[in-house]
Each structure stands twice: as C-alpha cells, then as structure tokens.
Image (cartoon, helix red, strand yellow):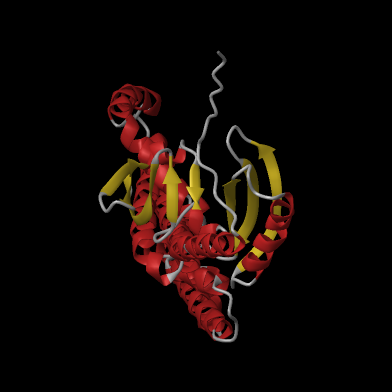
Length: 350
C-alpha cells in the first residue's frame, strides 16, 4: 500500500516517466476505441443496405496509428513544464501530422463519392464512366494534397507562404493559359459524368452530325456516325452545343404530307382523312393524331397527316413509315385517287 502511494505521489517516477505512462495509456485507449467502433459498425453494416456505414468504417480505418501516437504524446507532454522552443516544436509536429491525417480522410471521402457515382451507371457504361471518374478523382486528390502542403508550409516558421504563393501564382497563370483548353475539356468531362446528358449507346444529333456515342474520355467524346465514320468532339465544344438525344425519346412524331390531284371527285377527297386514319390505326405501335386537308396548292390538294410511333428505335421508325406509305399507295390505287404532279396550265390568247 505504501509503495502504491509512493508511485501516485511521484516519489518513484519522474514527471517525464509519468507523461510517458499517460501517453502510452491514451494510445492504448484510442486503439481499443478504434477497434471497438470498427467491429460494431461492421456488424451493423451487414444488416443494412446503406453504404454510409461502410464509409464511416473506412474513415476510422484510415485514422493512422501515427496520428493516434502523436495525439497521445501531445496530451502526455501537456503534463510537463517544457521550454518554449520545445513546446512550439511539438505543437508544429502535431499540426503537420493532423494536416496529413485530414488529407487521408478527404481522400476517403473522394473515393466514396466516386464509387457512388460509378454504381449509378449501367454495366455497359461503367468502364468508361469509372475511368473518367477515377481520373477526375486523381485530379481532386492532387488538389487536396497541394492544399495540405501549402497549409503545412504556412505553419513552419521562417517560410513566407505569401511570397511563395505569389511566385507560384504567376507560374500558375502561365501554365493555366497554356492548358486552358485541356482544363475546359476536363471539367466538361466531369459535367458529363455527373449530369449525364448522354451515355454510351445513346443516339445523338449535334448540329449537322448524327451518330451513336462510343466513348466518353477526359478530353474528347467519340461518336460513330450513321455513315460509319468516327466523329471526335472535344467535351467543351460538345456541351456548348445543342444536343438532341434520340434514345431518350418515348415516341417519334411523323408528319406526312400528301398531294392529291384537283381532278379527284369531292366525295373521294372528303373520305381521304377518315380512310387514312383507319389504315394507320390498324398498324401496331402507332397512335393516330390527325389528318386534314391543309391547303390548296398550286397543283395539288395538300393533306397533312400526323401520327406517333411508340418507340425510339430508328429502324422501327423507318419500317412503320414505309408500311404506312405502302398502305396509302394501295388505298389510293383501289379508290382511283391520283397523286398530283407539278403542273401548269398556259392559256394563249390570239
């Protein structure tokens, strides 16, 4: 009992040894807490479908032993009366290790966000999207570590971080101007990956060009045109254009114009809208909208027929248009209705 009292009173150990014991004790406690939370959260993660608990486990796992040791030693030294120089050195080391640990935590956050975005895309697009997002994640991590280095240098006495940043800023402006187009395409790639105006396999139209998306890269997007050649668009130019995405159409609209001869009897002209409506309604995957005598043309009675094809498939779109055209041709042949030709009557006076 007397020996224990002597230990507690500090007669048998020095203040430095007491600080060391405290530091080791705190280190052990922190390690036990870390393992406890990892185990409990791992058991909880097995019972839930959310990946947020997996992210928290990753954060705890990425809490490095160096950080825990530095934190324990820092707390232990608070029990000692140390010279100011030594105190400042310990404080500086602790700040640097804390910044390093924060860098690891933010890296874990970036990885988590990238994985969530990759999981949202379909299997056919996952490879391209994963490559793009991974590259962008690498850039983001580089920015994070650059900020960590700047903050670390700012805490080191004798280093004028303002002068350093100013000199780096001038260099950065020169480099930025040189790689301006590359950075523009890089951020456009990020926008495509996150906003998804189109994905691989979509049929799009940009200006006078139409084709199918083959690959979305960091700088450019490759499109296979309907004529067979490959079109390469820079990502920034592509996003600054008006894009028609045909794959995301629920239906396609067909506006059909017919010209009938003026010699056609009134009753047959009057029956044309109803008969055309009947034949369109009999064709599968079509929805009739309207049919009207639109105008009296120079050489024809012009009808306008509008209907929808309930699919975005271009091949089906063309097949149904062909079927409708053939049925109208057959109908007009049976009814004796003639299509109009461009004609002009010239009257000569003596």
